[in-house]
Image 1 (cartoon, rainbow, N blue to C red):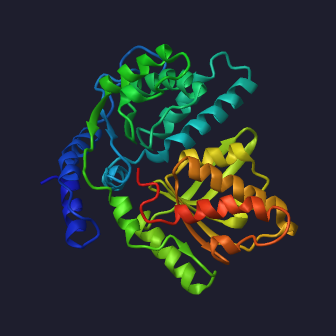
Image 2: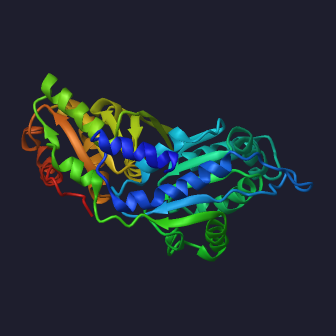
Length: 356
């Protein structure tokens, strides 16, 4: 039995996981990556980065939402004996790359990809990405050249995605220029479909309420239980960038984010910022939504915009609020317009909303 299989089996016996044959079938692929990572990288004689002469194949794990992809990658990441490793949401990683390339261009570097790739290579031999997806043309034009240099230097990539590689950047502008990256993924990574019939995340949510009112100690305790059941015990900030703004989701793990109303609607954020949030997460736990009125008109408008972005992106919402949706904004300018938001909140409260 492999090390990862031992860990998986122990968690099943403790009742922390439900046994899933589709998940068990992929454990050996993770173990293969872990085993080959123990071997040192041998550098060739050519190339600025030192081309690896014994490349390690990574893993591209795709499948539907809630099938356990991120959970399995967590088990792998925690157990792999590689000191230079990093786990990061793919969207946040690409935003970092854009920021680093901007800094390099400010120094009049001829090819900004080169120093950025060097920095990544120095710090990481193993990169674990959550939810690889390419929807932006600037990402599509950068990712191929960047990953080519990472792979040549022996960096191993393990990633989850909801899409088969062939469906990345589907119907995107100038997609023909992106096709070599898809071929690179297939060549340098084992592509595997986690074809489970069970949506584990949806099953975990079905046992919970999704809306807690009023805001009190009981609501806070319930919210924390939801976080533990759906996201796990880990949490770290997710920092997103949109234009010149930095958007901070203070707690994030396994596609689940948690923030307060003040942190998301009390800041000068706009529609593009909320779309970036909706694009990067699968579940949002939004705490401490107050009663809204004309004195907080800006915050109320931002809240409406946030809910619209989450609704259109089918992001699951868990919330604690001062009142039921229909009583959050009962009088004053904007109360009539808020009726649609209340209706959407009510719809999003259903246990199966967003399951698709």
